[in-house]
Length: 298
Length: 305
Image (cartoon, rainbow over all chains, first blue to last red; front, side):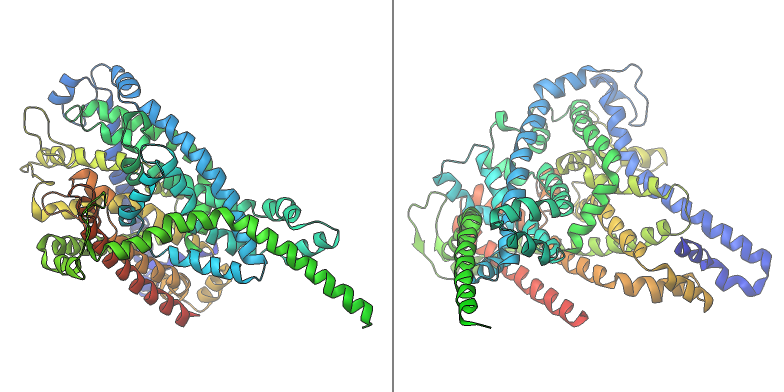
């Protein structure tokens, strides 16, 4: 709060010698300018989205004959039905959810296990692993798929959900890094006293490490969910069939059959964005915290 | 310490060691297998294949030495794709400065600051493909038959201007694509800067205000030093981001009209033209750039500490 008040002296500082009135005016002017800038910024965000929403409610004739800002004369819900069923958005949401649940579960389990061993035990293998994970971060993930693809192909995983899931689980170095950073701040004395009481390392991991890593798990889950939900490349490469559409690829495939039918594409976009908006409104605080923690640890 | 105590201690250490080893092996087994199979094995292949002429199925493989690397530097399209990353790099600096500016405004005494922050951040949560499609339409120039003018051209017409073919003009397409990228990612920087500014201890401002510091001085001497590491980190990450651009240009223009990026060229070379050897060489070039940038990053942050 103290910081907020001091910021308002931005204008007052310079204008103070020209008298009280002028400095008041300047301060008011700058304050008003701040709102103008913010409202302008918000318009730039909202206008393209509003156009999508309006367009999704028009029928094809009206879409082509009316101005993008014109309100629909009658509301055409059938676009949503087309997008949902024929456009496979519903299927996309379902497949995305399946992939998300499996990948997140294993990312958390394997990530925390790796971090526990690497950070707590001073073994050579742990150190080697840590270095190996850090180096792995250097490989450009998209262009690496040129060679990953043939390996996936050998395992018969191309055209299955297995390929993206294995990649989301197995090449997620940032999560492990975040877990290690959090573990640095969890006192060893907790493990030691449990060990003295006769607990083995498995018990310590499940009873002490995992519960204490809850904030880190939340951070990792937020980052992971956003990144999987947004991933277009791996899904498009490894799951080319319509039946395995995820949100990204189902929207992308709209461009073929509905290339000129923007009202249906728009309906698809609205369907995929509304759940995100609702989640965002409820979890705003956690999402901000999760992303900030994750980014600073990078 | 007596001898027996020493002996039991040794025994205990042996037991601890064995148990630790067992835990290490069990816990690390799956992650190690995954890491080797999906990162190090393909990485080794990448280096090996980059010296070969090979197609997708690995038939008729021929060792060609550094020929693929030579091809990269002699093909003008790849070079122009590299040049395009400069647009994105410039874009990220604009994005960072704008985010910093908005963050300082939002941290001052502003009503509805959470609402503004939420709106400005929200594009980050929208699916990438959705964002790309939204802007494909936003920048569209209608042909009068199957499609009408998009949002931007409608505004231009309303203001009395002539509609522009934004996405099919070589001079404008990259600027439009960078705009989309800023629109989508600025919220993330904003949230990070706000977090950093708010973590500055209030006592610093009180002390500064006693010394008669004004708003600009507050920014220059209190806020800026506090968030300097974040700015630096973001600038380095921006370089990595700029050479790895893929999704938005691929979906919006398919890389046409001079909007291709190096990553788009690489994937097309591999999966469309089936020149796996060449694509691997391109991948190695990208890898080397990332290594150089990362080394710079590590050096920069070592000095800071």
